[in-house]
Length: 251
Ligand code: NDP
Image 1 (cartoon, rainbow, N blue to C red):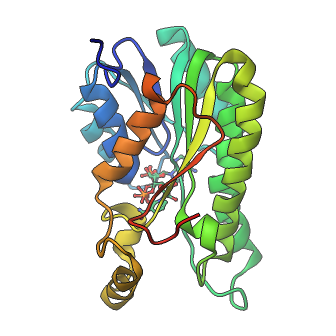
Image 2 (cartoon, helix red, strand yellow; image 1 turned 90 degrees about the vertical axis):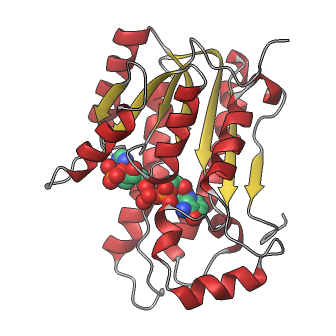
């Protein structure tokens, strides 16, 4: 029987794959035979480029592309590079995201808008530009969050962006269905890498008490959800939000 998690000949782009969840995702697709595109955003110290190259070292013949997802012309150039190398795109994971927590009373417009710009506008931008090269039968997986479902304290910007990603996922699912492209979202709870790692210990312990499974999620548990949604096993699932949160929120 064919292995449904074999992604040989599939072209996969994971935005923000220089570190955190995105890095583990692109490596997992690579281990399963995919042609991988690693994306990072430039920083003055060059750290992100170094991180992206470290990820790329574990992949066979990857494309590594510097691109800020909020910049339409950069995203268009990224899609052109993918098109030139591979002739199209099969799987897009919109994973890039940032966090800038502050209570509403203290949050500046810049803090609100910058998070919405990267998380929501960035996801729209990449989805729109990818549409030109996404092949029929393709897959889009968006990273939402439990924060977008519950609204967490201090996250007016982040929760709003992640809630809107759920709506964007549903609109995309409807519009892309004619090409047999499915669009789904993963809503992770608290995961042991990336942004959740920055939480103070007492906050982490307090959240753990409220998680029925009593622990943070392992990054591989988010990767597994992405592999499933991107696979042939999920061919009749579209417009869905998959909670991977240990039971913290049951929608
Ligand atoms: P990290 O902060 O570790 O990684 C975020 C990634 O996004 C980085 O690779 C970063 O690139 C990239 N990025 C940021 N801004 C841009 C931009 N403008 N253009 C392109 N790439 C950008 O986060 P996580 O791995 O924790 O999070 C990944 C996704 O999962 C996010 O969407 C997040 O909201 C979501 N999520 C995470 C949870 C968690 O507990 N970790 C929980 C719920 C959701 P670079 O390294 O080059 O700066």
